Length: 436
Ligand code: ZN
Image 1 (tube, rainbow, N blue to C red):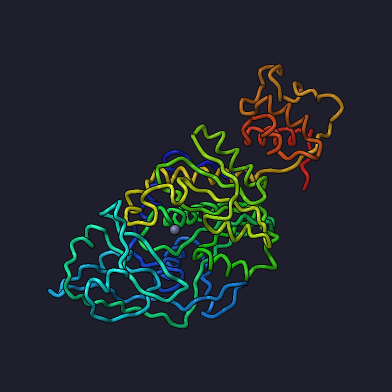
Image 2 (cartoon, protein in one colour):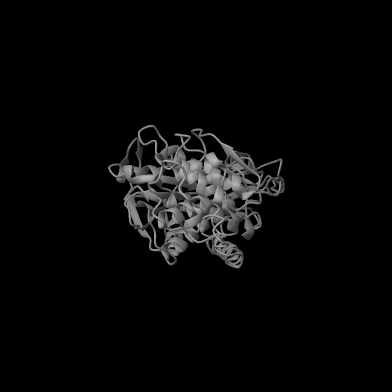
């Protein structure tokens, strides 16, 4: 079946709704483990059926080991007048992610190497982590650093790094077939909006939307901490990944930039072609790039031992917008209309793979006479407006069991759904047969 195009009003409402959900999740202190991550998953689970999995600290997942779980009660740098000059309570980016506990007094010159700023954007707080090397540190605006005097400072990081687990969420929507579409998004960043609350809210909205529809394919949505979470999922599911027929990593999908699609390692997977097709026919500017082993969890899904057909759907790529990994990646950077546009384009690409198929022309010797079947304009005014005659001709000509409907759409340069509609009309009239 064709996944319905949500109408314009629905899409506008959805943009506002997704932005609202991002605002709700924004304050939580997420990381690759811990209670902020768990609370984020719990809230996603109020909207879609979500299994939350816990992988214990110390578990081996391929070449990696699940780290201790990190939680923070509070953290600050306090001056000699008792004022908090850097405070985790006011912005969780102030604390370097995975900072070990510390309680100390020190002069500024001793503290200074522990402080990170961005001199070229003096009002922004940078985002830094140190997951696998135990340390502590703070991030602050450069202007706040310049305002510090030479006195003594009290430093407190009231955190725990202890045996616990890494959490991830999995939403499985069974379809008629076991073949799956994998949608993966990272959930490990604290108060940053485009990277990656945008991916989280678009994935959640897609899962919500698809859950209410009949589906040919099955869908699996993964909400995983970056790198280690994807590796943990792959490790747990290594015997079953062959059922993944198509996949997308969603990241940075809320800024106002053009859509960027990074192809899977295979480069010509159906999902690569479906996304390119949708973007070309959208009429909007967009960028298609080849696979490279950087970026997000496509690195894991496309590692050579898996080589899954998983591309990365984004707007402005990481590192190419100045607000990336800073406090300026906030709720103003992501726009309801961009979230909605990303939703719509991903859904359109899923609709292509959902509806693709291979047909065989049952009347391959010469063209069948379409007029008497009401499929052609000469048929006494009975033309079916919705069926494109060029699409009928292309489907009949190329349906020799070697071409999929997407192949036909590409070769004819017609939009996929007009090709699908032509095939459906020909199937109805017994002129085609669809292969299972
Ligand atoms: Zn990031």
